[in-house]
Figure 1: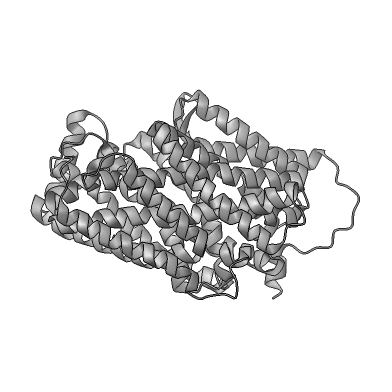
Figure 2: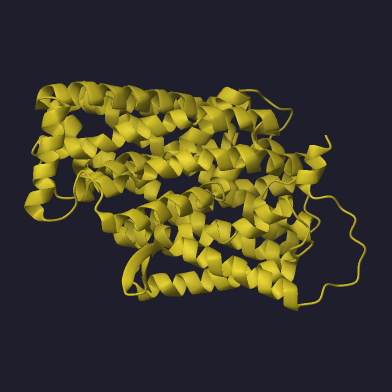
Length: 502
């Protein structure tokens, strides 16, 4: 990409960035509470977000700037295998429909703000709470850094160089998140998602028309993959098992992240979550259309320094400057929304499950809110420093591990909704086995997401996160059977039973 600045593109970019900045600061007055000095208000928006706000918010932090950049880049690089994100986003919503209303109900009734709160309330274990909370914070940090990577690609496409533009952008983000809390990304998500829809719909209509139609696009992509001897527009038989396991593992992990759970806990009711589980697959359609841009990059004959440049270069090459600026601003704003929610989710975890437990158990509600505000700023600064000082591959490798790690919190967070059979020591042992064993497997495989297994002379590759989860559950079951339970009368209903009784 050239370093020449297109002034019309830059002007459009600045206009929309200023617009969402103003909205971010205005958000503190939107649906205004008596005070934001409470985690329920600052960190969860008062738990009052209805169907449409939740739809934009959850979609906004689920489909991120890095998604817009990385999914087409993966399809450009390896073809059909990069489409594993589609079945994963289809699988995840039935899980959301079944599980998340129960989790929301438990959080609402008992004042839980984080996954750590839910685990402590269910099992009464500070150790298990600490494990789940620390996993959430660690897994979130590289995720925020990836948003910076997405924004960095868009800013460089404008011709802007140096570190100052991205530093200023995240400084503004930090300030309005501090001021408005979750209301800021919830309000900005409206603009972000509408812009992304416009960009993608324009691309799938205009780009093929300039390249000879979809038949020409697929033919060009197939020829490009055949020429380099890697990838293809159809899955190779050897890719089927890794494709399926990546999709399933990613689906199970998706709503364990603090930022997606924050969107769930901020909803106004269980039915709001169920409606969103029905409506959110519209984003899957968007994602599928977006992934096709990877094939279009081959048809356009782009010369790229990095696969991540495929989407920005397409827009710079085939669209007028003003629309390219619109597309780049949509990508940059697509980084602000999830980064804000992620930093808030991590801050809520630190405040509730670290600060309040181990540092200041008598902290007031206002004190909790203040600690969370400061923490959210520090989390963003940490992610920014990591991107500026460390290689991009470092963030990518950590994000790979982050998906595996966050998946290990699923048994502790979800099993207790349906059964009281599991006890805290067993779940803690399972978490440790999955976390350590999975990390060791990924390290031994050269930080690759797949591990090869041999059965009767046949070798298949399986997503390492699923293998770690299987180890997690197995160890939890064995420990639960071997370690005797303490003598105590436990007449509590599971959350599922309580829900079924109204």
